[in-house]
Length: 202
Image 1 (cartoon, one colour):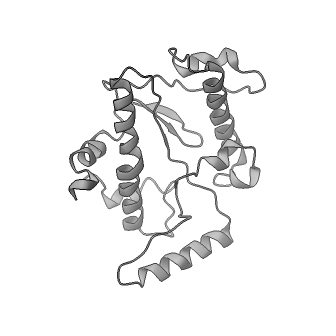
Image 2 (cartoon, rainbow, N blue to C red):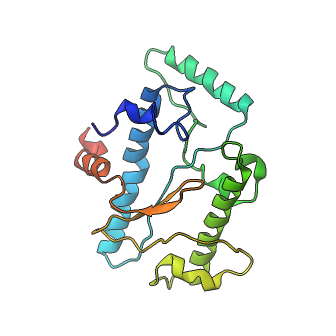
């Protein structure tokens, strides 16, 4: 119920290329929630519990691979499918660990999202702007991060609202080219499930 295959075969094809099966993408998102997204929710909750200020974000923009690389990944996936117990991949198609780094620096060949370089560049600008805001705040970040625009000098970009994390809203900034926005109750049901089934209990 939390990871229906229809999600990965119907409306979300912009994030989940059909070169890989819906079952593959369901597994990727499931383990991404378990090992990253929901682990970070527990972290920001704990930090806030002890009086700290936290900003939670989730990176959902897939890494951009050239066709030759995608074909190599496809062949590698087929080889692992033939193994008795499967196997792991890295790099993997999708929004993997570290996929945001390609967008942190000006790198046109790695941010040409769906053939639309301008969307990738805007995502880079927003990510850089938020990082600059955090750096200029120097730890004094009681204000919500979008209110720090006065610190920006060379970066001219409009930023979506991104408020300090609050457990009452479970607010998280979801980064994706063209639709980056703060989401309330982000991955709530999924994270509640993984919190109730920690790794040590499995």
